[in-house]
Every structure is written in structure tokens, then in C-alpha cells.
Amino acid sequence: MDAFYASVELLRRPDLRGQPVAIGGHGDPNSRGVVTTATYEARAFGIRSGMALRRAAELCPQCIFLPVDFAEYRRWSQRFKAAILELTPRIEDRGIDEVYIDLSDQIGVRIDGGEAIARHIQRRIAAATGLSCSIGVAPNKLLAKIASELNKPNGITVIEARDLEQQIWPLPVMRINGIGPKADARLEELGIRTIGQLAAVARERLVEQFGRSYGNWLHEAAHGRDDRPLVLESEPRSMSRETTFERDLHPVHDFQALAAVLATLCRQLSADLQRRGYAGRSVGVKARYDDFRIVTRERTLITAIDAEQPMRQAAFECLQRVPPRRRLRLLGVRAGALQPTTAAAR
Image (tube, rainbow, N blue to C red; front, side):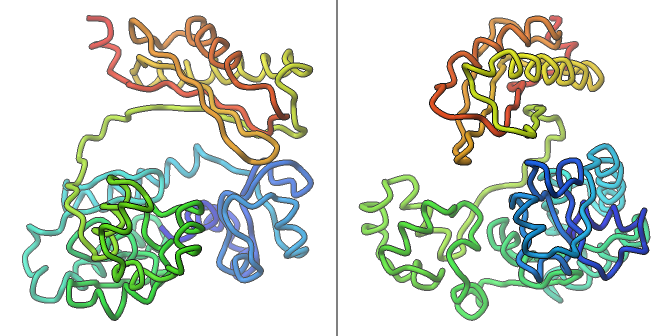
């Protein structure tokens, strides 16, 4: 979906269309929150997801900031996915604003490369939601992901195996989903900036530099090879709650304030689990330091839980294992290894 959170907000505030708008935190650019997404008008000023709201306001003083409303975004997410389900049930849900779709059984998809079907999907989503999306059509998930981001907004890009050299290899290596900032920096040191340059490197050298698993994957990804099937199960594997603080909190000196926040997050997460009928076999805590480094601690449980009290107890044990070396900007709690509560009861 194109700038999904911002696009949903524009449905409620059509008067803001054509203006730079950023979504994040409580909508206060003076707070410690970060941008979750922004309209393309705001992106023209350099505003990006994950950027501090204050920095976004510096880049674009006229930018309009709106608070995050996840409940509303989830409702529109269900609507656009329902529109696709009317066409095919073979969907891998990748979060609130993205899906993979298996079109291999659609009549005519191999005749026109799938562009007509992609256009049909766009029209169905627009009719059901009033929102636009960009679609990449390709032989596998890796190339489809890259293609979906090449022609935004409201674009369609078809990539076939013969298009690799012309359309994929000139792109920066970070266009490959799975190459993050650290790997990008290391590749830069090796003089590798584009996917084509990465494809030209011998597999053995990549294994030598990055290890057997990641080195082999880099080689395959650069050549557009990806044999991952769609994951069609709809049940969630984890649920979480987190919050960014208005001011940084020290793990020792501000422990009472952190404890109050963690207790609230556990209460909210417990309610989420019970409402959706799940229990978790693990509980974890996520903390982001003031230098943006993230640390996680997790505990595996004997039995799956959805109640607030045992969740809070496990989460506090995890919090006490977080190194108190710096102040914290963010705290979160996560329930993992989820199973339906009917199965947990057995």
C-alpha cells in the first residue's frame, strides 16, 4: 500500500491532500516519537520512516503532524486484504500494509506477464477502500518485493528473469530485502554498491567475507534466485506492545517509572491476547537505548499464558537482564510462540 498510514488519514482529512503530512507518536513534533510514514509531498523534503519527529519538523517546518491510530489502520488493512481474497485465497500476510499473492493459477498470467491482473487488483482495492497500492509481479518473492517499490505510488512493475541485468542489477544493494545498513557498509568497503556488482563477486569471496549462510544468500539474491514458498497460515506467531518515552529513562535511577510503563504494556498485551484468543509460550522485552541500539531479552515458559500477572512477572525478569549502560528511549513487551487458547488449555 502507498504511504498507508498517511493515506488512511487523508481519507478522514481530504483537505490535507497535496500537503506534506507525517504520522508518528502523538502527532507532536516536539515529542520524542518517530515518523511511522509520511506523504510523498513530505518525503520530497527528506522525511523518512524512523526519523525523529523533531528532525522531520526541522526539514519541513510546514509539515503537518498527525498521531498514530493503529485501530483505524487495522480496519482499512482488513478491507484491502478482503478485496484481494475475492480474487484468490493464496495470500501471505506480511503485516498491516503488505501482502504476497500467488498468481500462478490465474488464467492468462503467463501471457501478459501478470500486468492485467495486477491492474485488476489495483482497481478492486481502490473501489473497496479509496486507497492506492503499488504492485510488483515477478517469478519469486525477492524480485516481487523489489519490483513493488520501483514505481510508487500507484505503479505496476513486471520483472521477468530476462529483465534482471537491465532493471535489477543497476539498483543499490540495499534494495534487496535482507541487506541492512551494516551489510551495506561492509559491501561499500569492498567496493560493492550495486546489485550487479554484487552479482559479479565470486560466491567463495562472499562466503569468506560474510560467512557460509549469509554469503551464499547474498550470491543467490544478487542473481534473483529465491525459492521461498508463500506462507499461507493466517495465525499470528507473536503479538507485542511498545511505547517511546517523552524523555529518556535510566534502567536504574528511573526503574519505578519503567516498571509502571512495563506493567501497563503487559496489561494491554494480555487484553490483546485474550480478545483474539491466543496464549504465548514465551515473553520478551525490547529496549532501545538513547543511541538507538536495541537489546532484547526473552524467557520461555512451561505453559502458554495470556493472563496479565504471569506475563508481568516474566517481563520484569527480562527487564532486569537488560544491561543498564545507557538511558532508554523505548520499551516493549512481546508474547511469542502463540497458540490458540483452546489448544493451550489442553
